[in-house]
Image 1 (cartoon, one colour):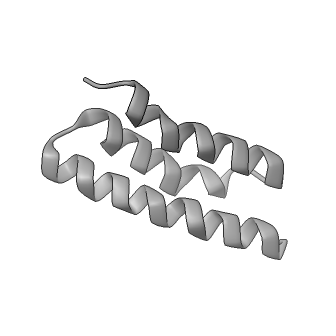
Image 2 (cartoon, one colour):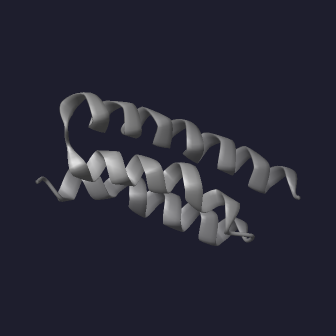
Length: 67
């Protein structure tokens, strides 16, 4: 595994944990699932640009979709 992928994965998983905790406490579905996605998807992505692009989309998604 590349160091770049490892550090990006750590960053996005940490942000995902924050979204997950926020979504659980506020009973907000979108941040909860985005946080879960941010914590899980780095295990399945093996390219740095795709990792960053997917992470950016999942981070921005709760700001545009309010349920």
